[in-house]
Amino acid sequence: MQSVPPNGGIRMYHPQVDLSSLEILRQVLESGWIGLGPVTKQFEDELAHSAWIGKHPVAVNSGTAALHLALVVANVPEGCAIIVPANTFVSTAAVALQHRCRVVLADIERATGNIDLNSVREILDSEPNVGAVIAVHYSGIPCDIAGLDEISKKYGVPVIEDCAHAIGTVWEGRSMSESPHIQAYSFHATKALALGEGGCVTFNDRQSAERAKRLRRLGIDMRTRTWAKPYDIPELGFKYNMGDIAAAVGLGQLASLPDNLHKRWSIVQRYRERLAGTPVELVREAGGCDRTGGFAVPVLVKDRERVRKDLDAAGVESEIYFRPLGEFPLRASRATPVAELFSRDVICLPIHPLIRLDEVDYVCDRLSDSVMCA
Ligand SMILES: *Cc1c(COP(=O)(O)O)cnc(C)c1O
Image 1: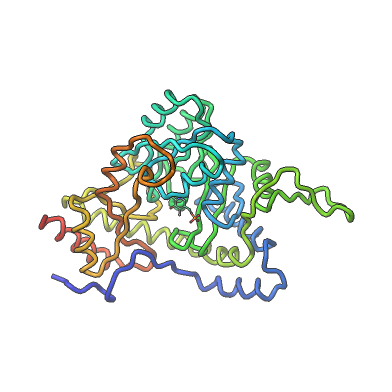
Image 2 (image 1 turned 180 degrees about the vertical axis):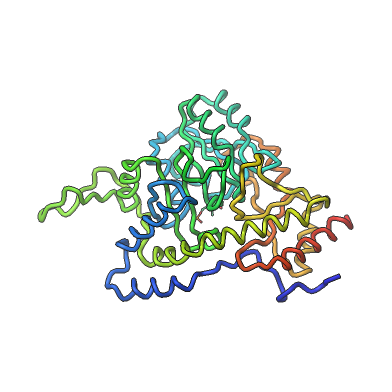
């Protein structure tokens, strides 16, 4: 039995930065312009051609900014209620409060960790003033996008997808660019396309993307500029734009994205093969034509704290995604019992493009040993 982890320890994250970023970055630094400019435009053009991301991408400085901008461009009225799953990062709910709305928590499905559409329908049937639903593709496992679309049409409420984990996700055999909804992506240091900080919001129509491009930079509109009046502000926006330094890193990262996503998928499959038949409960896709993007590998276990300590003692890092939002001061009061149990039992295991399959095997062996001796 192996008792020392390979390389001395297995980390949760290790963003790999493509070295071609260095050359593009050097060109930006030498170009005489390092703000929002041509490289951000080039990054957006390349994002638009990648099937991993929605259409008409608008690059911003974080995934949180992307979510907030999505609410504004979807014309979600201030003062309404916004439905948010309890199993998500705080950003998903924080933007609703920032938009002066109330957060109503939807419960989740234990099998996928994703928003439970029955819970969403229950809220829509009982709450009079719902202005939007934000769904999260938890850990990269796709939500029921078609089911959400039906709900959106039936109740006349826009759906916004929090795609922070969903780069590389496939739903019903389709790429994320085929979703009918506005989507918000994060390029944070831990995410599959890591720029350090950054994000983008995507739309199905060009007009919305153009409006978002004005709103990301305070609403500044140069279309009618003259010598006397360099710009107008028809609608006040936010300071959310990406700049060319981040976009340069993004171009390099995009080049290695297909390879990185492929590695993530092999790692997910290896975890699933190795943990099948153990008491560890795998969190996974609902449909046979769905595929996780592999942002995280969530599993459910009994006696989670002890198991995490055993992993730690064996040199394996782990994370809890997520504490249920009901535990934070968001003034969101609805009970979400499935999310609470999920959060009590969940462990997210290490995954990043630099983990080798024998390291995955080591993690699985230590995890199996720990759950067996309960
Ligand atoms: C990371 C994350 C965000 C926010 O992204 P930032 O780029 O850090 O602002 C939003 N939602 C979820 C589910 C996330 O994991």
